[in-house]
Length: 396
Image 1 (cartoon, one colour):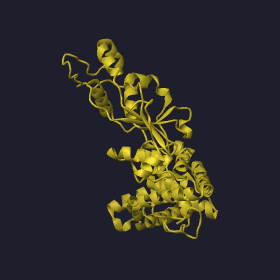
Image 2 (cartoon, rainbow, N blue to C red; image 1 turned 90 degrees about the horizontal axis):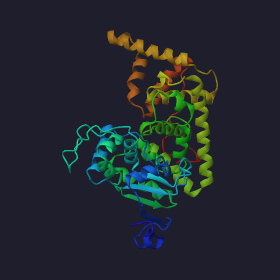
Image 3 (tube, rainbow, N blue to C red; image 1 turned 60 degrees about the vertical axis):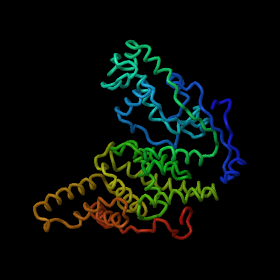
Image 4 (cartoon, rainbow, N blue to C red; image 1 turned 120 degrees about the vertical axis):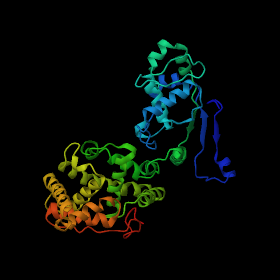
C-alpha cells in the first residue's frame, strides 16, 4: 500500500468490529522508496530510541552478519514499523520513530559504515564463484560492484502508522516483540502512565550514569529506578516482585486516566523524594563504584539512605560500607574453617542475597547493614505492596 493510498481506520469501522470507541482514528501505509540505500541516506529522519522501544545493543555480530547475508541472497526480511510524526521529547525533530526494526536498521547501517564485514563463510547462492566472505561494504563495492548494487537496491518492507493514541503504540510495540521476549523492565517501560517516564528520567541521575559500574542493558537501570519510586509510593519496604511492580505502574496509569493533574503531581512527588535520596547516595559513592556491583546491595543502600534521611541523624560514609564488606568477607573465611565460630547474622545476610525481591529478606538485611554501618539497627516497616494505606495518591 502506498502513502497516497493510505487507509484510515475510523471509529465507525472499529465500532462495527466491537472495538473501543474511545480510540482515535489512525492511518497505516507502506513507506515508498524504502531501499537499504535510501534508508541509509535518510537516516537522520529516523528516531531509533522512542520511549516504547526496547533497549539497544542486543544483537551479536553473528546475527548482524546473518541479516546482511539474507539481504544479499534475497531472503525475506520481517517488516519494519515506524510511527510518523512522533511527539515524544527524545524524538522531536525526526519525521519517524522506529517502533520495530531498530536492530535491523542498526545492523544495515553499521555494515554500510564498514563497522563489520560479511561472515567468513558467506556464500552467494546465485554464483558460487563469488568469493566475498570477510569483505566489508567498501571492499564489496570494489570487488563485486553488482553485488553491492543489489544490496543497495534491496527494498525493505516498512509499515508506517500515524496516530495520536499512545496506547495504540504501546500495544503495538508489546505485540511486535512477542517473538523475542522483552525484559520485565522493557515491557513495563511500554505500559504508559506517569511512572515509566519518571523512571527513565530518574535513571539519568548521576547515581545511575556515573556511580553504578554497570550499564542500562535491557532496562536494568529502569528496573532499579522503578523500585525506588515504588518504595516512595509505599513509604516503606515492600515485595518488589514483577507482578507488584506491574500493578504499581498500572495503578498510576489508571489514576492518570481519571485525574491527570492529580496523577502527575502525585507521581512527581515520588520522583522528587527518590531524587533526594539519590543525591545523598551520589555524595557517598565514587565513579563506577565497586561497592555497587550487585543490584541487591544497590537496593539496600537506597533503603538505608532513605531511612537515615527520614529520621535524621548521622550520615553514613563509604568507609563504613567498605568496612562492612570486609567484615562479611572475613566472616565467610571463618565459616569455611568452622561455621560455629562465624557470626550467624552476617552469614544469613549473605544467604538472603538471593532473595532480591522479598520484603522480609530486605528488612532483615537492612537491619544488619544499619547495625554495622550506623551502630544501630533500622527498624523499617514492611508494607502491603498493593493495598491502600489510607487513601494516598496512587495507593490501592
